[in-house]
Amino acid sequence: MNLIDAPSPNFDPRTAPPTMIVLHYTGMKSGQAALDRLRDPEAKVSSHYLVEEDGRVFRLVAEERRAWHAGVSFWRGRRNVNGDSIGIEIVNPGHEFGYRPFPEAQIESVIALVADIRTRWEIEDRDIVGHSDIAPSRKEDPGELFPWRRLADAGHGLWAEWPAAPGAPIGEGEEGAAVFALQAGLTRLGFDLPPSGRFDADTATVVRAFQRHWRPERVDGVADGETRARLIALLRVSSLP
Image 1 (cartoon, rainbow, N blue to C red):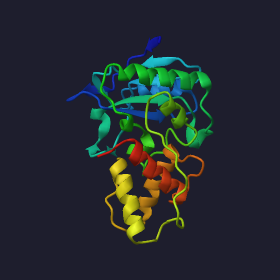
Image 2: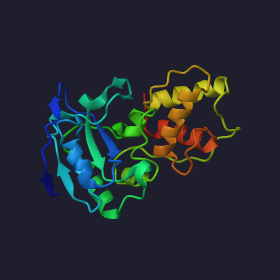
Image 3: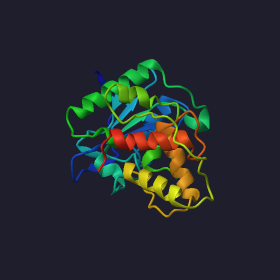
Image 4: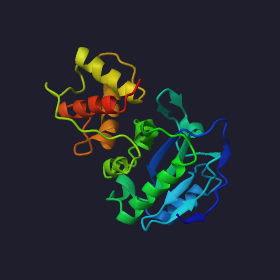
C-alpha cells in the first residue's frame, strides 16, 4: 500500500501501545479541506491517517505517537481513548453536508489499511470501532452507510446477525428488567451505560450508536427485537468476558 506523507504537528507522546482502531468520517465539504484542518496547528485536531474517496491514503501522524482525533470518549473501560487508539479519517461530507455511500476504492483502501495496522499492533476485533461508538452523545460518524459488515467479513471487527428476539420494542420512558438487561449488554459490549433499569435519553443515544454500527437498516434509538437480537449475537460470537 502506497502512503502519502502529509505530516501534522498535532500530536504528543503515547504512554502505551495502541490497542484500538477508531474510524471517522471527515464531515467536511472536501477532502482537501479536511486534510488542511488536520494539519493546522491552530485546529488542535489530527488523525494518524486520512483515506480519500479515490483510495489515496495520507499518513499524518506516526502510529507511535498520539493523534488528537477522539476527544471525550469511552470504550470498554477506557476514557479519552486517544492514548489507546489509531485514528483513521475517511473522506465523506457526513450528515451535515450531504452524507453519501463510501466509494469502492476508498473502502478497499480502508480495509487494506486496517489489515496493515494490525500486523504491527495487537488490536482485537471488538476494539475496531467508530467515533459514534466511543462518543455517542457527540458523534454520528462514520455512520450507518459505512460497510461495517464488509470490514468484518474481511476479518476486521465484529458482526453478527440473529433472528429477531421476541417481545415488544423497548423505548424511552420504559422501565424494568428488560431495560436493565439491554443496558447491561450494551455496557458489556463496550459502551458507557451503567444499568439502571430506566430507558432514559442516554440509553436511547447509545442504542442509536449501536444501530449505526450493527443495525444500520433503522437508526431510531428504539430497541426492537432485531436490535436486541444482534446485541445478544455479538456478545455470543465475540466471547466477551
